[in-house]
Image (cartoon, rainbow, N blue to C red):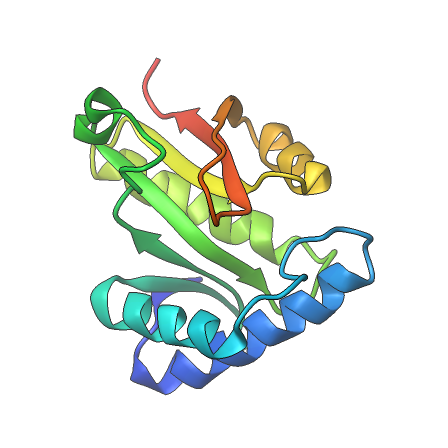
Length: 164
């Protein structure tokens, strides 16, 4: 079931972000590694939590996947792209991997965006995490381009058209 997270979930978001970093380290990716200032990472999560909705997928009363629905990042998308009706996802974390919880959350967010009349689901993900890129393409997303912004390891832009 799709829910909007509230203040009672804030600490869970931080915990799952930390666990995601540990899990990714076992997968041979450089995502979330290499000199990240964790105090700043958590301050950024708090800033997003205060400014944007976070949604979660609930199974048996437990939040098992979550993401933020934020504003698109203007350093990555063109002015024309920024004007298009879209849902922009970020901070996509899963509590237990390999159970389909992330896919269920993603499908629910896609359906919600369709009902809201959005034209796109868009995101920016870690540039070097090719497994993550494959995950999104397997869910129908297309790779738009990869941007190289100084100081950013993300920049692989993906989108899913919601209109035919």
